[in-house]
Length: 404
Image (cartoon, rainbow, N blue to C red; front, side, top):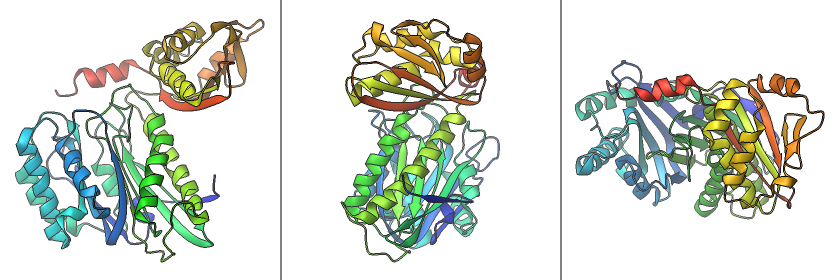
């Protein structure tokens, strides 16, 4: 991984990027619920979206706009997902991009839109129309935190990250903001994540890099195994650094990828660490699998098991649940070859409790806020990892009354 220098702030740490967030009245709480990220110059852009067959109107509109490869603004709202709202929802999403475009004096096609919140409820368009001029006026280089706050739903804290990395001897900045702590097991994206860089990047290269790094970060997290209807990740490269455009196969692009990988991994871990009701962030690392795909399949099965996740919550070293989750997966598993370790303490060898295993030490490890659960399938060289969290009574409480 490239050497990176972590910076304060988030998406507006990137030169040429402004942001803002206001309360439009979408949320009954009166908290900020409308965010805008704006590049002072048109940016090369790549985006990935949920593969859920049920997609929100904002996803449909943004998928269309992203095909053009140029984006200058991202409008995101929270409190209402604008999903399953029929043709009206699509018209509302299109109108918002048109209004934002008019206010910023850019084409509507250069505006991406995203929304998160309750499904099946129309957007309060009168309130949004009234708030958009105020939102545009709020744009500033210090507005990243306000935007991060405005996209939150059940998150308990904003999620931002920024870093500087050297690309072909020139400093380049990457910054991002994300949200999503429930309905999270992404496929192609996570709930909402917007990343910007001042590097100049060729469009084909940016698309390839975005897909790859999303796969290695946001597609390796799970909170509850449910895939959102609103997942959106967008990466904007505005070229303000004035480097020669980075193309596929170049050394400079590899250096940029190192920074992007570090940033997305940090944001992904922040999402899991703030999972609804979560108190633990656990890395499920599988090695020794017959293939890399098997390693990921096995890791996901363990990471998504409600029984494993409740054991993590209770700090119960119930390794039998892990064996169960491995065995039910589609990965090749031979039980007498499996080894399991919590942190540095091996508890299972050859599919059975290791003689001399220190369960008290395992409980100590499980009491930590973060730790790694390592599984060796003993079958090959395949390896991968997934980040997960525990399943608590608080998660049930939050989601039992989500719409009420």
